[in-house]
Length: 105
Image (tube, rainbow, N blue to C red):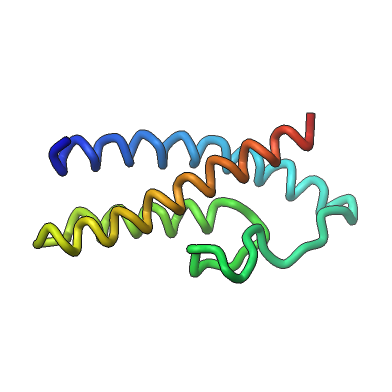
């Protein structure tokens, strides 16, 4: 698969994560308003994310920034390195959002 197709698939995945994150963040905000959901961050310290937030959207922003960085890679080795990290983050975001949704219902 060429780089353009890879980037297009990543965009589709990040867009899906974004929509799920918006819904999850609404639930988190409602729970926090009720005195529930008191935690500092979504992902643990050893996650591939550098972001630390108690909502999902900041993590989606990191994914989008990583995608931009990927698009700016000028050589194949850099592209592969950034891609590997981005794919791990996307998989973790999908898995965590699915688990969150399952817990709710």
